Amino acid sequence: MADWASWGLILTVCVACILVVKTDIKVNTPMGQLFVFELQREIFQNDFEPFLHHYAGKVYNDPMLFKCNKQAFPDLPGWLRFTQRHPYDNGFLYGTPLVQEKTIIEITVINKRSYDTFRDRLIIRIDPPEKRLPYQAEFFIPLREIEKVLPSAVQEEIRQDLKRIWKTDQLTFVNITSALDRGGRVPLPLAGHFEGVYVKVGSDQRFSECLLRLQTAEHKRQCEAGGRVPGNCAVCSYPSNCVTWCNSTLIDVSSPVAFSPAPTMGPGILDAEGVYDPPESPPPRDFLPDYIVTVIVPLVLAIILCLLLSYIMCCRREGVEKRDSKTPDIQLYHHHTIHGNTTELRSMAAGRGVPPPLSTRSMFNARTGETAPPFQTDSPSIPLILAQQEINTDTLPRN
Ligand SMILES: *[C@@H]1O[C@H](CO)[C@@H](O)[C@H](O)[C@H]1NC(C)=O
Ligand SMILES: *[C@@H]1O[C@H](CO)[C@@H](O)[C@H](O)[C@H]1NC(C)=O
Image 1 (tube, rainbow, N blue to C red):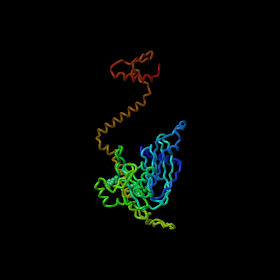
Image 2: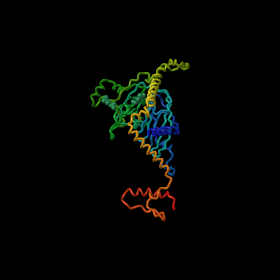
Image 3: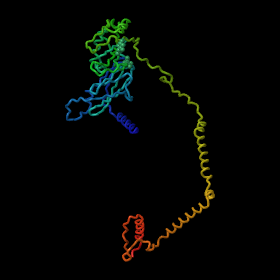
Image 4: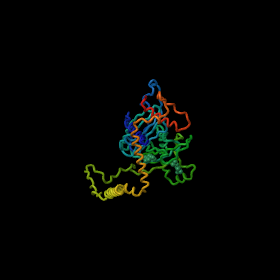
Protein backbone atom coordinates (compact mmCIF):
# COMPACT_ATOMS: atom_id res chain seq x y z
CA MET A 1 0.00 0.00 0.00
CA ALA A 2 2.80 2.35 0.94
CA ASP A 3 4.27 1.83 -2.51
CA TRP A 4 1.06 2.83 -4.20
CA ALA A 5 0.80 5.89 -2.02
CA SER A 6 4.28 6.99 -2.97
CA TRP A 7 3.63 6.36 -6.66
CA GLY A 8 0.48 8.40 -6.36
CA LEU A 9 2.47 11.20 -4.79
CA ILE A 10 5.08 11.09 -7.54
CA LEU A 11 2.33 11.14 -10.15
CA THR A 12 0.68 14.11 -8.49
CA VAL A 13 3.97 15.95 -8.34
CA CYS A 14 4.60 15.20 -12.00
CA VAL A 15 1.15 16.40 -12.96
CA ALA A 16 1.89 19.54 -10.97
CA CYS A 17 5.18 19.92 -12.85
CA ILE A 18 3.57 19.84 -16.25
CA LEU A 19 0.82 22.30 -15.43
CA VAL A 20 1.28 24.96 -18.03
CA VAL A 21 1.78 28.49 -16.90
CA LYS A 22 -0.97 30.54 -18.50
CA THR A 23 -0.09 34.10 -17.64
CA ASP A 24 2.81 35.98 -16.19
CA ILE A 25 1.68 38.84 -13.97
CA LYS A 26 4.36 41.41 -13.27
CA VAL A 27 4.27 43.77 -10.33
CA ASN A 28 6.76 46.10 -8.74
CA THR A 29 6.87 46.98 -5.09
CA PRO A 30 9.24 49.08 -3.05
CA MET A 31 11.24 47.41 -0.34
CA GLY A 32 10.16 48.05 3.23
CA GLN A 33 6.53 48.84 2.40
CA LEU A 34 3.44 46.73 2.56
CA PHE A 35 2.82 44.72 -0.61
CA VAL A 36 -0.70 43.43 -1.26
CA PHE A 37 -1.79 41.47 -4.28
CA GLU A 38 -5.43 40.53 -4.52
CA LEU A 39 -6.24 37.30 -6.37
CA GLN A 40 -9.55 38.30 -7.89
CA ARG A 41 -11.82 35.42 -8.65
CA GLU A 42 -13.65 37.23 -11.46
CA ILE A 43 -10.40 37.60 -13.39
CA PHE A 44 -9.40 33.98 -13.00
CA GLN A 45 -12.95 32.93 -13.83
CA ASN A 46 -12.49 34.24 -17.36
CA ASP A 47 -9.46 32.01 -17.79
CA PHE A 48 -11.48 28.86 -17.24
CA GLU A 49 -13.26 27.28 -20.18
CA PRO A 50 -17.00 27.68 -19.78
CA PHE A 51 -18.17 24.34 -18.44
CA LEU A 52 -21.12 24.07 -20.85
CA HIS A 53 -20.54 26.01 -24.00
CA HIS A 54 -24.21 26.70 -24.74
CA TYR A 55 -24.43 28.60 -21.47
CA ALA A 56 -21.58 30.80 -22.55
CA GLY A 57 -23.60 33.93 -21.95
CA LYS A 58 -24.03 33.08 -18.27
CA VAL A 59 -21.81 34.73 -15.72
CA TYR A 60 -20.13 32.08 -13.64
CA ASN A 61 -19.21 32.38 -10.03
CA ASP A 62 -17.26 29.22 -9.29
CA PRO A 63 -15.68 28.41 -5.96
CA MET A 64 -11.92 28.60 -6.41
CA LEU A 65 -8.89 27.65 -4.41
CA PHE A 66 -5.51 29.26 -4.81
CA LYS A 67 -2.27 27.53 -3.93
CA CYS A 68 0.75 29.80 -3.86
CA ASN A 69 4.40 28.93 -3.61
CA LYS A 70 7.71 30.37 -4.59
CA GLN A 71 8.83 28.93 -7.90
CA ALA A 72 10.71 25.64 -7.39
CA PHE A 73 9.99 25.78 -3.66
CA PRO A 74 7.20 24.19 -1.67
CA ASP A 75 6.22 27.29 0.24
CA LEU A 76 6.10 31.04 0.01
CA PRO A 77 9.14 33.16 0.79
CA GLY A 78 9.36 34.15 4.43
CA TRP A 79 8.15 37.71 3.98
CA LEU A 80 5.04 36.83 1.99
CA ARG A 81 1.84 35.41 3.41
CA PHE A 82 -1.32 34.21 1.72
CA THR A 83 -4.87 34.23 2.97
CA GLN A 84 -8.19 33.20 1.51
CA ARG A 85 -11.04 32.74 3.91
CA HIS A 86 -13.42 30.82 1.68
CA PRO A 87 -13.50 29.49 -1.92
CA TYR A 88 -16.06 32.20 -2.72
CA ASP A 89 -13.71 34.95 -1.44
CA ASN A 90 -10.77 36.56 -3.12
CA GLY A 91 -7.31 35.59 -1.97
CA PHE A 92 -4.59 37.96 -0.84
CA LEU A 93 -0.84 37.73 -1.02
CA TYR A 94 0.64 40.25 1.37
CA GLY A 95 3.79 41.02 3.24
CA THR A 96 6.70 43.39 3.56
CA PRO A 97 9.78 42.63 1.47
CA LEU A 98 13.02 43.50 3.20
CA VAL A 99 15.48 42.18 0.64
CA GLN A 100 15.80 43.53 -2.86
CA GLU A 101 15.38 40.56 -5.16
CA LYS A 102 13.11 39.22 -7.85
CA THR A 103 10.57 36.80 -6.51
CA ILE A 104 8.52 34.49 -8.71
CA ILE A 105 5.37 33.14 -7.14
CA GLU A 106 3.45 30.30 -8.74
CA ILE A 107 -0.28 30.59 -8.25
CA THR A 108 -2.20 27.40 -8.91
CA VAL A 109 -5.88 28.11 -9.45
CA ILE A 110 -8.27 25.24 -8.80
CA ASN A 111 -11.86 25.60 -9.89
CA LYS A 112 -13.82 23.65 -7.30
CA ARG A 113 -16.82 23.17 -9.58
CA SER A 114 -15.18 21.79 -12.72
CA TYR A 115 -11.83 20.88 -11.08
CA ASP A 116 -10.08 22.64 -13.92
CA THR A 117 -6.66 23.77 -12.86
CA PHE A 118 -4.14 26.14 -14.29
CA ARG A 119 -1.18 28.08 -13.10
CA ASP A 120 -0.20 31.71 -13.29
CA ARG A 121 3.08 33.28 -12.32
CA LEU A 122 3.36 36.41 -10.30
CA ILE A 123 6.70 38.08 -10.82
CA ILE A 124 7.39 40.52 -8.02
CA ARG A 125 10.23 42.92 -8.65
CA ILE A 126 11.32 44.50 -5.42
CA ASP A 127 12.64 47.99 -5.96
CA PRO A 128 14.90 49.96 -3.67
CA PRO A 129 13.04 51.72 -0.85
CA GLU A 130 11.12 54.76 -2.05
CA LYS A 131 11.79 56.85 1.00
CA ARG A 132 12.98 56.46 4.51
CA LEU A 133 10.29 55.91 7.11
CA PRO A 134 12.11 56.80 10.32
CA TYR A 135 8.91 57.25 12.31
CA GLN A 136 6.76 54.20 12.64
CA ALA A 137 3.81 53.29 14.81
CA GLU A 138 1.66 50.24 15.21
CA PHE A 139 -2.05 50.26 15.90
CA PHE A 140 -4.40 47.48 16.84
CA ILE A 141 -7.80 47.33 15.18
CA PRO A 142 -9.85 44.89 17.21
CA LEU A 143 -13.01 44.76 15.11
CA ARG A 144 -11.43 43.58 11.87
CA GLU A 145 -10.13 40.50 10.16
CA ILE A 146 -7.11 40.45 7.91
CA GLU A 147 -9.02 39.89 4.65
CA LYS A 148 -11.34 42.77 5.42
CA VAL A 149 -8.43 45.18 5.86
CA LEU A 150 -6.30 44.25 2.84
CA PRO A 151 -8.58 45.60 0.05
CA SER A 152 -7.19 48.97 -0.99
CA ALA A 153 -10.45 50.84 -0.27
CA VAL A 154 -10.38 49.75 3.37
CA GLN A 155 -6.67 50.50 3.64
CA GLU A 156 -7.43 54.00 2.44
CA GLU A 157 -10.19 54.47 5.05
CA ILE A 158 -7.82 53.40 7.80
CA ARG A 159 -5.08 55.63 6.45
CA GLN A 160 -7.43 58.62 6.50
CA ASP A 161 -8.12 58.06 10.21
CA LEU A 162 -4.47 57.59 11.06
CA LYS A 163 -3.54 60.73 9.12
CA ARG A 164 -5.78 62.68 11.42
CA ILE A 165 -4.11 61.19 14.50
CA TRP A 166 -0.61 61.77 13.10
CA LYS A 167 -1.51 65.15 11.59
CA THR A 168 0.35 64.47 8.36
CA ASP A 169 -0.41 63.42 4.81
CA GLN A 170 2.69 61.30 4.37
CA LEU A 171 1.67 57.94 5.77
CA THR A 172 2.70 54.60 4.31
CA PHE A 173 1.66 51.14 5.37
CA VAL A 174 4.62 49.11 6.50
CA ASN A 175 2.96 45.93 7.68
CA ILE A 176 -0.47 44.48 8.27
CA THR A 177 -0.67 41.35 10.39
CA SER A 178 -3.48 39.27 11.71
CA ALA A 179 -3.46 39.10 15.49
CA LEU A 180 -3.50 35.32 15.04
CA ASP A 181 0.06 35.53 13.69
CA ARG A 182 1.07 37.28 16.89
CA GLY A 183 -0.29 34.69 19.25
CA GLY A 184 -3.86 35.95 19.25
CA ARG A 185 -6.73 33.63 19.86
CA VAL A 186 -9.19 32.35 17.28
CA PRO A 187 -12.44 34.09 18.17
CA LEU A 188 -15.75 32.40 18.76
CA PRO A 189 -17.61 31.93 15.48
CA LEU A 190 -20.18 34.49 16.50
CA ALA A 191 -21.16 37.83 15.10
CA GLY A 192 -19.23 40.58 16.83
CA HIS A 193 -16.11 38.49 17.49
CA PHE A 194 -13.10 39.30 15.35
CA GLU A 195 -9.50 38.20 15.15
CA GLY A 196 -8.09 41.70 15.23
CA VAL A 197 -5.45 43.20 12.98
CA TYR A 198 -2.19 44.99 13.65
CA VAL A 199 -1.45 47.85 11.28
CA LYS A 200 2.01 49.33 11.14
CA VAL A 201 2.44 52.64 9.39
CA GLY A 202 5.48 54.75 8.79
CA SER A 203 6.20 58.33 7.84
CA ASP A 204 9.06 60.74 7.43
CA GLN A 205 7.09 63.30 9.46
CA ARG A 206 7.49 63.57 13.20
CA PHE A 207 4.95 62.04 15.53
CA SER A 208 2.16 64.35 16.57
CA GLU A 209 2.06 65.51 20.17
CA CYS A 210 -0.87 63.26 20.73
CA LEU A 211 1.03 60.20 19.54
CA LEU A 212 4.03 61.09 21.65
CA ARG A 213 1.77 60.75 24.66
CA LEU A 214 1.81 56.98 24.03
CA GLN A 215 5.37 56.89 25.29
CA THR A 216 4.75 58.56 28.63
CA ALA A 217 4.74 56.62 31.86
CA GLU A 218 1.44 58.21 32.69
CA HIS A 219 -0.15 56.62 29.63
CA LYS A 220 1.11 53.20 30.69
CA ARG A 221 -0.24 53.67 34.17
CA GLN A 222 -3.63 54.76 32.89
CA CYS A 223 -3.84 51.76 30.56
CA GLU A 224 -2.90 49.36 33.31
CA ALA A 225 -5.54 50.88 35.53
CA GLY A 226 -8.12 50.23 32.82
CA GLY A 227 -11.19 52.27 32.19
CA ARG A 228 -11.25 55.37 30.02
CA VAL A 229 -7.85 56.77 29.11
CA PRO A 230 -8.03 60.58 29.06
CA GLY A 231 -5.30 61.24 26.46
CA ASN A 232 -7.01 59.18 23.77
CA CYS A 233 -6.93 61.09 20.51
CA ALA A 234 -7.84 58.19 18.25
CA VAL A 235 -10.57 59.07 15.78
CA CYS A 236 -12.44 56.79 13.46
CA SER A 237 -14.94 57.49 10.77
CA TYR A 238 -16.16 53.88 10.76
CA PRO A 239 -16.58 52.07 14.08
CA SER A 240 -14.99 48.90 12.71
CA ASN A 241 -11.78 50.78 11.89
CA CYS A 242 -11.27 52.17 15.39
CA VAL A 243 -7.91 51.48 16.93
CA THR A 244 -7.38 50.50 20.55
CA TRP A 245 -5.48 53.41 22.06
CA CYS A 246 -3.82 51.35 24.74
CA ASN A 247 -2.47 48.82 22.24
CA SER A 248 -0.89 51.49 20.04
CA THR A 249 2.87 51.68 20.16
CA LEU A 250 5.47 53.94 18.67
CA ILE A 251 8.34 52.06 17.12
CA ASP A 252 11.82 53.29 17.51
CA VAL A 253 13.41 52.85 14.11
CA SER A 254 16.96 53.87 14.72
CA SER A 255 18.08 55.81 11.69
CA PRO A 256 19.00 54.82 9.05
CA VAL A 257 15.98 52.66 8.35
CA ALA A 258 16.45 49.32 9.97
CA PHE A 259 16.47 46.83 7.22
CA SER A 260 17.86 43.45 8.00
CA PRO A 261 21.65 43.72 7.64
CA ALA A 262 23.27 42.07 4.68
CA PRO A 263 24.54 38.63 5.64
CA THR A 264 28.15 38.68 6.78
CA MET A 265 30.30 36.44 4.69
CA GLY A 266 31.87 33.61 6.57
CA PRO A 267 35.00 31.79 5.48
CA GLY A 268 34.64 29.58 2.44
CA ILE A 269 32.95 32.18 0.27
CA LEU A 270 35.00 33.10 -2.73
CA ASP A 271 35.91 36.66 -3.55
CA ALA A 272 34.72 37.78 -6.95
CA GLU A 273 37.89 36.70 -8.77
CA GLY A 274 39.28 34.13 -6.36
CA VAL A 275 40.51 30.70 -7.33
CA TYR A 276 39.06 27.77 -5.55
CA ASP A 277 41.66 26.02 -3.49
CA PRO A 278 40.26 22.68 -2.41
CA PRO A 279 41.17 21.53 1.08
CA GLU A 280 43.67 18.72 1.52
CA SER A 281 42.00 15.37 1.26
CA PRO A 282 42.15 13.55 4.58
CA PRO A 283 44.99 11.02 5.13
CA PRO A 284 44.20 7.56 3.84
CA ARG A 285 42.82 5.31 6.52
CA ASP A 286 43.80 1.69 6.99
CA PHE A 287 40.68 -0.41 6.94
CA LEU A 288 42.48 -3.80 7.14
CA PRO A 289 42.05 -4.37 10.92
CA ASP A 290 38.36 -3.48 10.65
CA TYR A 291 38.03 -5.80 7.71
CA ILE A 292 39.73 -8.65 9.57
CA VAL A 293 37.59 -8.20 12.67
CA THR A 294 34.27 -7.84 10.88
CA VAL A 295 34.68 -10.24 7.96
CA ILE A 296 37.63 -12.62 8.24
CA VAL A 297 37.23 -13.72 11.88
CA PRO A 298 33.54 -14.63 11.59
CA LEU A 299 34.28 -16.35 8.28
CA VAL A 300 37.05 -18.49 9.80
CA LEU A 301 34.84 -19.39 12.75
CA ALA A 302 32.06 -20.39 10.38
CA ILE A 303 34.42 -22.60 8.34
CA ILE A 304 35.77 -24.33 11.49
CA LEU A 305 32.27 -25.02 12.73
CA CYS A 306 31.28 -26.33 9.33
CA LEU A 307 34.27 -28.72 9.20
CA LEU A 308 33.58 -29.94 12.73
CA LEU A 309 29.97 -30.63 11.90
CA SER A 310 30.89 -32.46 8.67
CA TYR A 311 33.40 -34.62 10.55
CA ILE A 312 30.81 -35.59 13.16
CA MET A 313 28.13 -36.26 10.61
CA CYS A 314 30.17 -38.17 8.01
CA CYS A 315 33.24 -39.72 9.62
CA ARG A 316 31.82 -40.69 12.99
CA ARG A 317 28.91 -42.70 11.65
CA GLU A 318 28.79 -46.06 13.41
CA GLY A 319 27.43 -48.14 10.57
CA VAL A 320 25.54 -51.40 9.99
CA GLU A 321 28.03 -53.74 11.64
CA LYS A 322 27.76 -52.03 14.98
CA ARG A 323 23.98 -52.09 14.77
CA ASP A 324 23.90 -55.78 13.95
CA SER A 325 26.31 -56.68 16.74
CA LYS A 326 24.12 -54.88 19.23
CA THR A 327 20.82 -56.47 18.11
CA PRO A 328 19.81 -59.82 19.68
CA ASP A 329 20.07 -62.75 17.25
CA ILE A 330 16.44 -63.75 17.54
CA GLN A 331 15.34 -60.27 16.50
CA LEU A 332 17.67 -60.32 13.53
CA TYR A 333 16.36 -63.72 12.49
CA HIS A 334 12.81 -62.49 12.75
CA HIS A 335 13.66 -59.55 10.63
CA HIS A 336 15.31 -61.68 8.01
CA THR A 337 12.34 -64.02 7.75
CA ILE A 338 9.98 -61.11 7.20
CA HIS A 339 12.29 -59.86 4.51
CA GLY A 340 12.52 -63.27 2.89
CA ASN A 341 8.77 -63.85 2.91
CA THR A 342 8.11 -60.49 1.39
CA THR A 343 10.59 -61.08 -1.35
CA GLU A 344 9.10 -64.50 -2.07
CA LEU A 345 5.58 -63.06 -2.28
CA ARG A 346 6.82 -60.34 -4.59
CA SER A 347 8.39 -62.87 -6.93
CA MET A 348 5.24 -64.96 -6.92
CA ALA A 349 3.18 -61.90 -7.75
CA ALA A 350 5.37 -61.24 -10.71
CA GLY A 351 4.54 -64.67 -12.21
CA ARG A 352 0.75 -64.20 -12.06
CA GLY A 353 0.20 -64.40 -15.84
CA VAL A 354 -1.53 -67.84 -15.81
CA PRO A 355 -5.31 -67.88 -15.41
CA PRO A 356 -6.46 -68.82 -11.92
CA PRO A 357 -8.31 -72.13 -11.50
CA LEU A 358 -12.05 -71.96 -12.04
CA SER A 359 -12.74 -72.91 -8.49
CA THR A 360 -11.38 -69.59 -7.34
CA ARG A 361 -13.85 -67.68 -9.49
CA SER A 362 -17.31 -66.55 -8.51
CA MET A 363 -20.30 -68.65 -9.47
CA PHE A 364 -20.89 -68.68 -13.17
CA ASN A 365 -23.00 -70.40 -15.73
CA ALA A 366 -20.79 -73.01 -17.36
CA ARG A 367 -22.76 -72.85 -20.65
CA THR A 368 -23.02 -69.10 -21.20
CA GLY A 369 -20.07 -68.08 -19.14
CA GLU A 370 -22.36 -65.53 -17.33
CA THR A 371 -21.35 -64.49 -13.88
CA ALA A 372 -24.02 -64.62 -11.20
CA PRO A 373 -25.11 -61.31 -9.77
CA PRO A 374 -23.47 -60.52 -6.48
CA PHE A 375 -25.18 -61.72 -3.37
CA GLN A 376 -27.52 -59.38 -1.66
CA THR A 377 -26.12 -59.83 1.77
CA ASP A 378 -25.37 -57.84 4.80
CA SER A 379 -22.04 -59.40 5.30
CA PRO A 380 -19.40 -56.87 4.31
CA SER A 381 -16.85 -59.47 3.38
CA ILE A 382 -18.67 -61.10 0.50
CA PRO A 383 -18.97 -58.13 -1.85
CA LEU A 384 -15.30 -57.60 -1.43
CA ILE A 385 -14.53 -61.12 -2.54
CA LEU A 386 -17.01 -60.84 -5.40
CA ALA A 387 -15.54 -57.63 -6.58
CA GLN A 388 -12.15 -59.24 -6.64
CA GLN A 389 -13.48 -62.16 -8.59
CA GLU A 390 -15.35 -60.01 -11.06
CA ILE A 391 -12.15 -58.26 -11.88
CA ASN A 392 -10.62 -61.62 -12.50
CA THR A 393 -13.43 -62.64 -14.90
CA ASP A 394 -12.90 -59.46 -16.89
CA THR A 395 -9.35 -60.46 -17.57
CA LEU A 396 -10.47 -63.97 -18.65
CA PRO A 397 -10.62 -64.83 -22.33
CA ARG A 398 -14.32 -65.48 -23.25
CA ASN A 399 -15.30 -69.03 -24.36
C1 LIG B 1 5.36 42.07 9.51
O1 LIG B 1 4.66 41.26 10.43
C2 LIG B 1 5.06 39.91 10.45
C3 LIG B 1 4.19 39.15 11.42
O2 LIG B 1 4.15 39.72 12.67
C4 LIG B 1 6.53 39.83 10.84
O3 LIG B 1 6.92 38.47 10.78
C5 LIG B 1 7.35 40.65 9.88
O4 LIG B 1 8.67 40.64 10.28
C6 LIG B 1 6.83 42.07 9.84
N1 LIG B 1 7.58 42.81 8.85
C7 LIG B 1 8.03 44.02 9.09
C8 LIG B 1 8.79 44.66 8.00
O5 LIG B 1 7.84 44.60 10.14
C1 LIG C 1 -3.78 45.53 24.55
O1 LIG C 1 -3.17 46.18 25.65
C2 LIG C 1 -3.49 45.63 26.91
C3 LIG C 1 -2.88 46.52 27.97
O2 LIG C 1 -1.74 47.15 27.52
C4 LIG C 1 -2.97 44.20 26.97
O3 LIG C 1 -3.30 43.64 28.21
C5 LIG C 1 -3.63 43.41 25.86
O4 LIG C 1 -3.10 42.09 25.84
C6 LIG C 1 -3.37 44.06 24.52
N1 LIG C 1 -4.12 43.35 23.52
C7 LIG C 1 -3.58 42.96 22.37
C8 LIG C 1 -4.47 42.19 21.47
O5 LIG C 1 -2.45 43.22 22.08
